[in-house]
Image: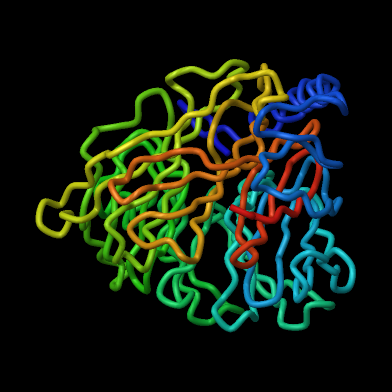
Amino acid sequence: MANLTAYEPQEEAQMRKRLFGIIAALSLLVLPGMNGANAGPTPGGIASDNVEYVRFVPFEVGTATGVTIKDKYMYLTSWKNITIYDISDPTNPQMVGTPFPLGFKFENENVNITPDGKYLLFSEELPQNFLHVYDVEDKSNIQEVASVAGVGDHTSTCILKCKWVYGSDGSITDLRDPTNPKVIAAAGQEGNWHQLIGLQGGGHDVEEYKNGFIVVSPISAPLMALDVRNPLKPKVLGVGEHPNPAGFLFHSGRWPRGGKDKFLLMQGERNAQPRCNENNGPFMTWDASKVRKTKTFKLIDTFRVSNGTVADGSPPVNGLGCSAHWFEEHASFKNGGLVAVGYYEHGTRFLRVDKKGKISEEGYFLPYGGSTSAAYWANKEIVYAVDYTRGLDILRWRG
């Protein structure tokens, strides 16, 4: 989640609290008898006929931000706790132990777990600026093992099998000894990775699509892919054809199949828009098939939601915005396929990318009084919809 023109988490937190009242009010618009040609009411919300509402798991209402699924565990971080769930049965998550209290730490999106499942990285942007490392090997006994000042970027991402960390704001941290991380360069310092590649205007997220290669989501610059096999000498592999987004920032991106796919998937964000328009954050497909030759990703298609009547699967007004947020492609995605996207008050949208990169909507789940932050595939048919105002909605894709 981000502000368009400048990244100001304090204002974001205040905005979110104010808008929760608006979101809650929207739930009053949903009546049990409402239905549409391709939609129907469920105990949790309005769903298209190819989406089954399974159940609801309440947790960290209003503060849940980061979720990572690894092996049979789901790691949830909020502004105040870390909680681990056993998802051996993905339709019935079981809390392991009790939540580990953090105090107030904001905002920790895009939580990373080391490949061996032993350590969790937590990026505290406010009230302090710290990268925290927690030992989560014993899921019922979480322990903090390191805390490093100056590198609490908005998101912090493992690279090179989590031996190094790239922060979204440019920081570089040596994590070869997770109990004793070493800051190489903090954001704004000489030698940070933004400075090394000439990135201006800041960044929101970094996603490693294969070992030593990342997709970068800048705030006011073109999207890009980097070779970071030498983390102190990153190389630009390709950039988006447009100089900067139109009316939104790049929030997060993914290059499926370890960069072998011909499409790069990107999501934009623009907050606090009560009505949908052409400037809202879209979901996008970019042609990556020729980037090794041209050094350029070319925009293929964009998808934006619109306002509706609730019964048709879309809200009439919005609180946090008509914007896409965290997303994940299906395991079967290959030069096209299915993607699940968190869409704030538009809930979870299931989008289809065809072989030409064109995007269409195939299904949706619109929660009652919800604001969906992210959608993650727990397996080939179960989706976890992480919701700021509700908790966790568990959905089954039947398309």
